[in-house]
Amino acid sequence: MIAEKIYLIPTSVNEAIKMATDNLGSFKYLAGGTDVMVNRFQGNEESPCLIDISKINELKGITKEKDFLRIGALEILEELKFNTDIKAEFPMLIEAALTVGAPLLRKTATIGGNVLCENRCLFYNQSKWWREAVGYCLKCDGDICIATQGKNACFSELVSDTAPALIAMDAEIEILDVDGAKRVKLEDIYTGDGVAPRNLSETAILTAILLPLGREFKTDFHKLRERESLEFTSLTSAVAIDKNGKLKIALSGVDPKAVVVEGTVEDNRAALIKKAIKGGRTVDNDMYSRKYRREMISVYLNRSFEKLGI
Ligand SMILES: Cc1cc2nc3c(=O)[nH]c(=O)nc-3n(C[C@H](O)[C@H](O)[C@H](O)COP(=O)(O)OP(=O)(O)OC[C@H]3O[C@@H](n4cnc5c(N)ncnc54)[C@H](O)[C@@H]3O)c2cc1C
Image (cartoon, rainbow, N blue to C red; front, side, top):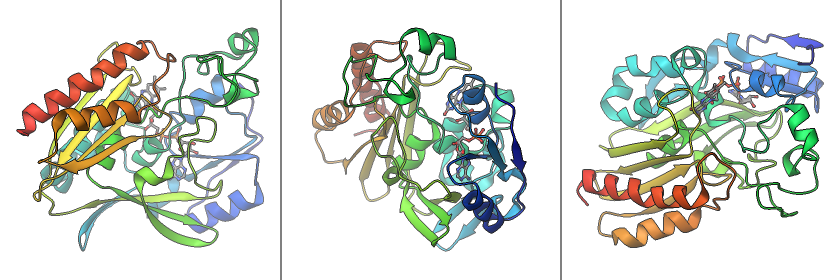
């Protein structure tokens, strides 16, 4: 692991953005650090400057605001289960958060870091000497994608477990950057390009996640992984139906971005499932095969539709 040359600890978002602007091209924000630090140990992240945003109080707290529940980006995954508003209106978020890694990890990991955690691939998340031995890949200075042997696209997967749950419940995010604040749908930040999986600028800070109140979501959530603890997802599937019959499916683990299918409870089940499977550019870059993961999309969605009575 490389030694940090600069470690900065801002106490406000504006100060953090200023520090980021002063260190453009050579810094990384650090929240819980459970993703960043592992990537540094593996030599996949080597920024000489770390900006530790964990002391910024304005990024903490869960508050009701008009039609939305506002969850600060630094809220800790393990603690979401104690919030009565999340428990009452968005229990799927708690379910998703509690599938992330293992208890120790969840006590440090933040929700902002979770939706922004780095994409993963069997051929990328390896030690430096392993990656060097195979000639590297598109995501780390190589010429080809090892999974597909292609030259044009990297298929490293979005592995966030809370992202599908949040997207299915129409979450938006609040972003603060040098040019001010903006609010976008969570799914819109994922590009689908495994090398640069998010379209946020380097200095942008995710300040909060906003969930719409009063929609009375009925939800179902599934995660495919080899062990019930510690493992990253091979497929995470979230389905939400609101009180007006609007249905939204969101998947991670099967594409560089979140796969999103929207419809209503009146729609044909098989057609929705087909759309979800087709939406994922799933390749053999995971412990489970492409074929199996695509089949499991159908299994999980059928289970969800049964449970939700559509
Ligand atoms: C053994 C192990 C198992 C894991 N299993 C899972 C799993 O099952 N599911 C899963 O989803 N993840 C898993 N992870 C990955 C990681 O622990 C989680 O995604 C975690 O939620 C990341 O949050 P963090 O606060 O630690 O993020 P950090 O590591 O601090 O940051 C992650 C990324 O987000 C950026 N960032 C963080 N906060 C902000 C912000 N507010 N504004 C702008 N940028 C920001 C950082 O610069 C970095 O790029 C696992 C990690 C390990 C080590």
